[in-house]
Length: 119
Image (cartoon, rainbow, N blue to C red; front, side, top):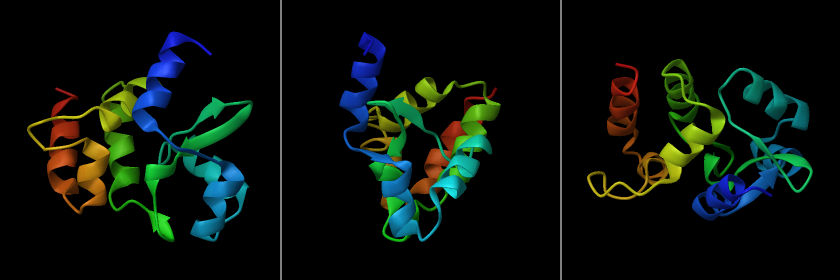
């Protein structure tokens, strides 16, 4: 594991394998792979398995607004690592992290900020 991987792991916390993520969402692991390919989810290899941050799943659905926000970040030129770092880094002006704000139904401000990153 590189230093960068360790930093991301510290920021993200808990990861779900594709199988673990698929179960509460009621989809197949292949559907999770498709969402990752479409930039509607972001996954990285952790301990030999493609995994997504557990905070991306909210009950039986993805966090509201997450797919659109990830597309905005990708369109702004963010790599997966950069996007994860941005989503999970505390921002005192929100307050909290962007993913926390999205989980608390404050995603409009997060998306506005993500749109601003492209300019």
